[in-house]
Length: 178
Length: 62
Image (cartoon, rainbow over all chains, first blue to last red; front, side):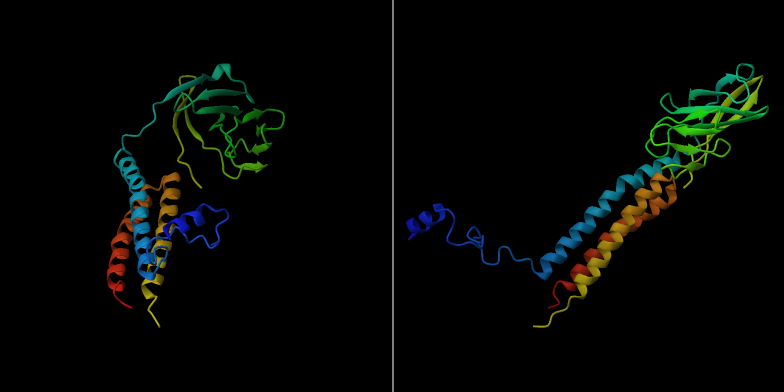
């Protein structure tokens, strides 16, 4: 009898074609109401655990929020920047590239220039009086940082500026708004 | 046999709320609304005992 079974199982394809020949226990594959509820409770536990790191990170951020200040950084001398010119710099980190534009005699704007679409560096087009992302022709208004054409939907984060002793300093980055 | 699926439905609702809370927490973190993140994480954490309680209550109902 045992031998017969073995021969059967070695035979391909099996005579049995319902793929249940490997079930050893009665009702082994059955998911009943109670088992399903157990799965749901387990899933709830997994979800609860999965949000813990986010909560912890947020808590740390909240606790350290007062300490989080940006060091002022000199960008450029006013004398070296003509009206309509732009200068690239990095702020606050060395990899956060940003763009300072002198729009008028006493009008300066600076934005972090990673395009809000796919992070290509946005450049200042003096002729068209707007900021252009070369990757997919996203266009940003230089006065507000708001996207006016192309794929980007969100404005560029603005860098706060101050003038001191004939130079432009970056003092902070505006909080990212939706 | 007629059986009660109340527990199953309630747990499905809990799981749905879990998904919503998780998604909202991650989104709020991205937009730096840290208080909201903690609220959602706490909500998610409290949903687990609720789920457990529903399960224990409904386990032995036919």
